[in-house]
Length: 188
Image (cartoon, rainbow, N blue to C red):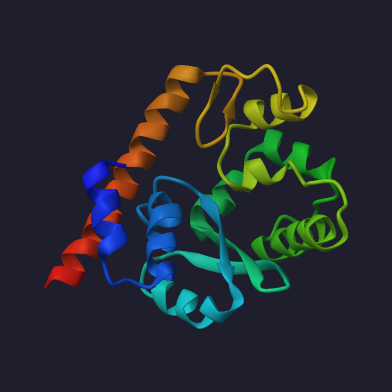
C-alpha cells in the first residue's frame, strides 16, 4: 500500500470496519480469491452483512470469543468448484470433512476452528485450502511445520513461487483499488 494512501486512510472518517473489510476482502469481492478470514469486534457485526450485500460474497461466522468474531468471507461458486477437485476432497477427508456441500463443509470447519479458537486445540491448517492457497503449499506447510518456505506473502509459498507472486500482485492491486474507492466515496 502506498504511503499516501495509508496517510489518507488514517485521516479519513471511515468506520474501521469498512477499511478492514476493504483491506482484507477486496480480492474476494473482486472474484480473484475464493475466500478470506475477517476478524472484527462483535459490535461491528451488523455492518458486516450490510457491507457484503450485493457483492456476491457470502459470509459465515466461524467463531466468536470475548469481543471478537471471525468470519469466513467467500465466493460460493468458487468454493463449490474447489470441492470438485479430487485431490482437495481427498485431502479434506483426512481432516474429517465429508458430504461436500458448502453448508456441511463450513459447519465442520467452524467446529475445528472453534476448537482452536475457544479451547486452544491445534490450528486447522487445512483452512489454507478454504482460503484458496494451493494444495501443494498447504500440504508442504503442514509437513514442514511452517518452516523452509520459498517466500512468505499472503501465504507461505513452497511451490510455484512465480505463480504465487503474480497472484499476490493481483491481490495487492485489488486492495489498493478498494481502499482508494473508499477514499473517493468519502470525498464525494
